[in-house]
Length: 213
Image (cartoon, rainbow, N blue to C red; front, side, top):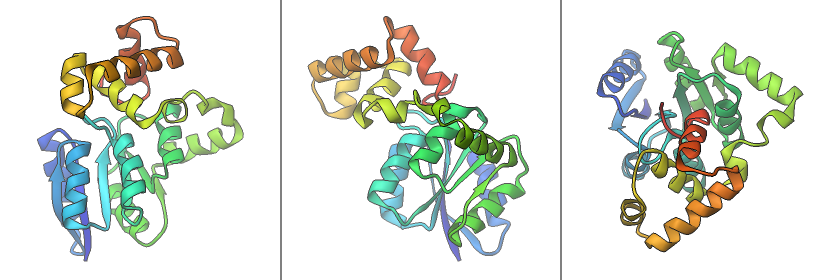
């Protein structure tokens, strides 16, 4: 039996994922989460074989969660779900070691195929994603500005919360750090991204899949 956890901040999507996966007699959904932090707690608790994660989730998105799972639970396979087939999203996913990347515009059977493939040690990418990966290999300079190569993990977390509309004080309380430290991270992020105001940070976060539009 393959044990899976699923994560998406939309209840209807989670219900659909559960039904699709559990229609296969060999797959059991061991838990559901609405954001990346819940995923990390859930994985620690239920020890699944695979995590199926939406890329765009509040507080801690799928890409950030993937990075932390690779560090803390390297044996757990990770399949990302996304409506985005553009280069920055795929570049980040591949560089962080995603085992699969499925477009939500694809077939529901793709999810089951992906879970089965990655648990057996393989990988599974939607055809448009696979084509984009090939293009990235031919033109590696395309992804050099993606956030996972130029921002630290904490900087990306602060950027994510800024883009979601949290104040510096709220971010500090949420992350357990001082407001002064939040401001320092914000300044560093703006310098690295060449941003002059918060709206530019929001656009960057949306463009690179850290938050949903």
